[in-house]
Amino acid sequence: MIKSVFCEMVGIKYPIIQGGMAWIADSSLASAVSNAGGLGIIAAANAPVEYIREEIRKTKKLTNKPFGVNIMLLSENAEEVAKMVCEEGVKVVTTGAGNPGKYIEMWKAHGIKVIPVIASVALAKRMERSGVDAVIAEGCESGGHVGEITTMAIVPQVVDAVSIPVIAAGGVGDGRGIAAALMLGAVGVQVGTRFLVAEECTVHDNYKAKIIKAKDIDSVVTGRPTGHPVRVLRNKLTRKFQILEKEGAGAEKFEALGVGALPKAVKDGDVDNGSVMAGQIAGLVCKTQSCQEIIKEMFSQAEETLNTVKVV
Image 1: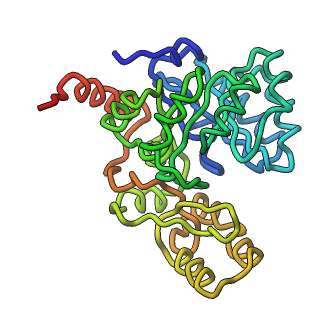
Image 2 (image 1 turned 60 degrees about the horizontal axis):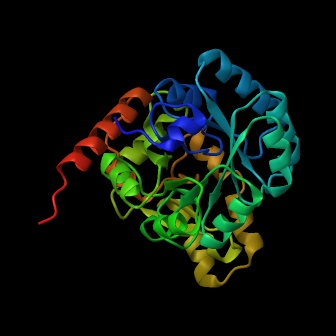
């Protein structure tokens, strides 16, 4: 079995984190991933603090395994959520969209492992100096908000730049991706898109069907002019975004078009006019499975890959 220092750090069986996908990563998905031996994550996003608190408490009833909360630091309620996870005894916090520096001392005092998502070597170094426990080096192949560097390029550079554990994210959809990440020096992976079609994932069936039908070229990055580009699957909405880009529209027009687009797809099932966030590995995803089946299959394939690879 593939083991790593990350498993020991957070008390899990397999070195895999479920991505903190906004509007998607709830108690149902997080508890299922944790019960399957990974690290389930609840996404705080912009949700009300009491809603997140309730999801944490639901997860505790559904699993006795470790799980975490993802905090989007640009959210208006980030500070409230940062305090609340201490009150609720959360063991792991992953962060995105900002610098968690001002919360680290408080989290550490409550025994919380802090693992920020980073998209550059410079930010990884800064996070290490701040005292985080590990970093998630995320490449632009991932779904949702993305940077500019690929996973293949960023992971080994971050591994060489810091002494803390590095988790690879972006473009990991099967065991071959896990094996590749480990060869690049990562001690584990973060996976989002593959879990979108998990039986325990509560996204609309239309969303899952679009992921399963996706081909390798079906994702596109939209919203670059806003400074917050997002990778999604192509549909009517992305074509409207592309028109705005050609017209040289201002950021406010992009933001107006994107308001409510994610829940429209996730909850309402409008995969034509909603935002269907997914990574470039969507083309690898071809079936719905339980979280346990997904994780076992991925790590069995990873072990097989690592054991059979030959250099000629």
